[in-house]
Image (cartoon, rainbow, N blue to C red; front, side):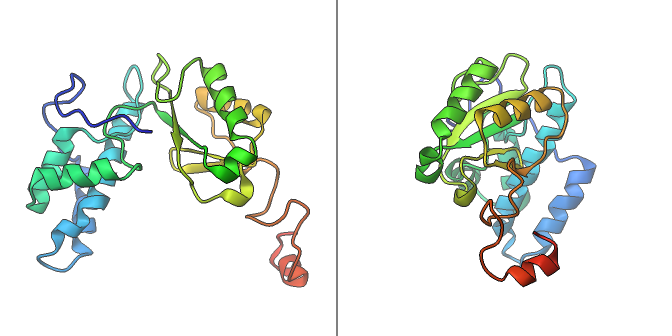
Length: 219
């Protein structure tokens, strides 16, 4: 589970402003909605704030990942002409928004039934032991935060984790360690299945429409 929203925590900055590059994205997001309905852009603006913080955190020492400070929520409320509490409600409801600092690499481990049946407990144990932290904790260097989440929708390729925007599927203890080791060096691991599975088809290959699959180059 993600950390609770503490508006008075010491880590909360006093102010937040969208950068020039992100301000353009803010304007583009708002323009997608009819006049007078700009408050509908609250979710994309929260996402943009989190991404800007992530970019800033990648350059900081120690590093940190994307999250949404209270000041950013207040700025979004000002931009969209809505009560701050309404922005807080959205940000705290959805697990995709981090309302407290996290590591540069947010490792979200699915522990729901299909992943659990396929060994998610082993993946959790591998991560906690390899990184030396518990669930909901962040490594001292600011690089990793571990979090257990509900179903991420990749049940066929269980067990799996989401790290920032990427899915890593068909995991074993060994492949999970390799992914963490690569990320610790800021290298880019292979995303998707770690067993060379194509999309969500059987590991042995397609079982139907074989000719079409062959023509599409997926076998």
